[in-house]
Image 1 (cartoon, rainbow, N blue to C red):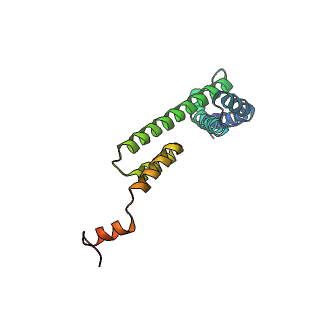
Image 2 (image 1 turned 90 degrees about the vertical axis):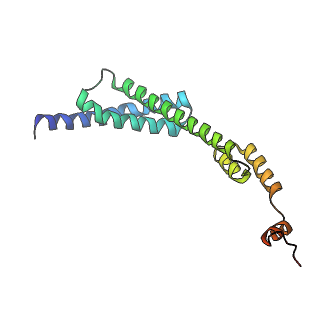
Length: 145
């Protein structure tokens, strides 16, 4: 085994030790900042994955716990921005759907905008053809005998 292999294993073991020592503190900090346990845990896991890739190559930072917390905070902010932008885009798509209130309502419901979704469903129901209208259209505009 070469020196670089031993150093990499040592660094991975060191990252594991740091994870055990710092992850709870980092998660708690992010929960206080964002108020979301899942977001905090996911961001800390992602930060440690980055640490596993970069620390063996670049060396341990002077404050590994601070590095993890900062990297996790940045990951969480990125995720929140992506989700926010995704909701904005879906909302814009929903607004552009011409006259298809049921589809628009489904999109709004998925976005968590339940009151708007309910209004769109009601508009769709009001516009739905009656059985007689459907029969008339099915017969090509001829009245049924």
